[in-house]
Image 1 (cartoon, rainbow, N blue to C red):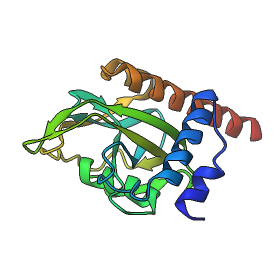
Image 2 (image 1 turned 90 degrees about the vertical axis):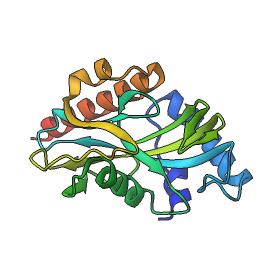
Image 3 (image 1 turned 60 degrees about the horizontal axis):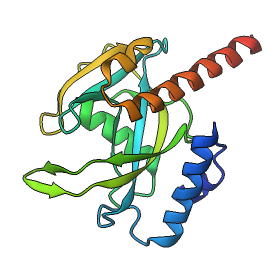
Length: 193
């Protein structure tokens, strides 16, 4: 399935995802360069919510621009395999290599606002990240490496403490949603046993 079909067929978790999916699909139809940063209004990004094997910790980075602990992720930069983008970003931002998708399906759709900021000495105007996120698992015992040009810390955070580490209210809502979805998945798995 191609990347646009995976967004079209994604089953929204809530009203926020339903509306965001609708707008993301409109942007895909309207803009030919939605996969690249050439589109300075909105572009596709791909993130990973990285769990350990016991699913009680999340691998997060302290993001330099946002000065907050956050999930890993980045720009598609023309790449259509958004799961591959998410996994690449985990590797680049944390040094972890042993990563596997919990599922190849999209785990979350979100439109994220990006405030104006300076990156590599150049001003980047406010814009939207059309975020396609995946749930992945990584090996908690692997050596963590800081990517100094993007983050100033990498660590495993207990899943129930994720929002205490984030100082971005809009991202706290996203993380709360993801954690709720994970709890529902755990309950479904336990019910099957």
